[in-house]
Image (cartoon, rainbow, N blue to C red; front, side, top):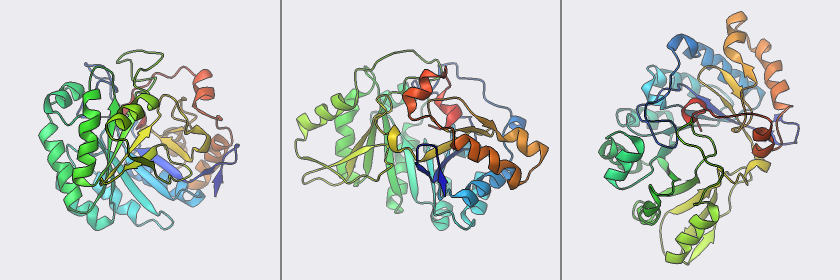
Amino acid sequence: MLTDNHNRVINYLRLSVTDNCNMRCQYCMPAEGIEFSHNKELLSWDEMFLLASTFIELGITKIRITGGEPFVRKGLMDFLHRLAAVKGLEEISITTNATLIGEHIAALKALGILNINVSMDSLDKDRFNAITRRNYFDVVYNNVLQLLQNGFNVKINCVVMNGLNTDDILPFIEFAHEQNVSVRFLEEMPFNGHSKSFEKIEWDFLKIMDHIQQHFPGTHRMNDGPSSTSENYTIENRRGSFGIIPSFSRTFCGTCNRIRVSAKGELQTCLYTNESVSFKKLLQQNPHPDLIKPFILKAIHNRFKDGFEAEEKNEFKKSMSLIGG
């Protein structure tokens, strides 16, 4: 069992397999994009498998595959086949923009990888394309429906941005009812790869919640897990659910059970701080789990108490595509 210096059990690894993405979402990066890593800078699939296996040996039971957009990297499905066979790993999940997942739905289902989070910030085609700066709405929407029809546990993640997609909040509540799915609204993050800068947000947790309750007063709080990043709700006489993730307010930090590894092999013990260990260099020196484990343990035993403390001690301005959210 992995336990940090604040007595929090760490059992969840968010593993980014690439920083590349086929979208240019406004809350993630500037219109011109960012300089993505060259393949030689990334962990190889073998290095990534060795690293993931080592984390599992230490007590990680859940791995979420993230990016960038994970499906843009060739070899992902082969990696997932290998990872799914590792003893001790209880769950593999994926966060994706759902542009490329369609052809892999059957294979994912066969592997038992059924928990899929889809980043989708509007149900309006024009708004969606404006936010993502790409014309993928129809593909994403149809792939979401395919996932649902095939029995996947789909969560829709919508970043709420003032002046861009607040008109989508209520349609997403309707979508949750129609499709019996979970929709989660995220506060916009205080860092976003220099796409813009801000010190406060208008559409925070309270305003999003108030807006929903004005139109759907019969909301009931669900029993969230102890390490849930979202507060989740049902609405009387309606299917599906909705949640709100206070990414800016950071009320979830106290029970954080997760760590992150970037596609370049950088260990990040908090979403709001810089990397603490470069596994790429370590693996090039000696690709053996016993070399890696002491560095993992040291980093976890020196975690910040919360995101505010981490941000206070670090200047952190990375694009979300570099850290996998």
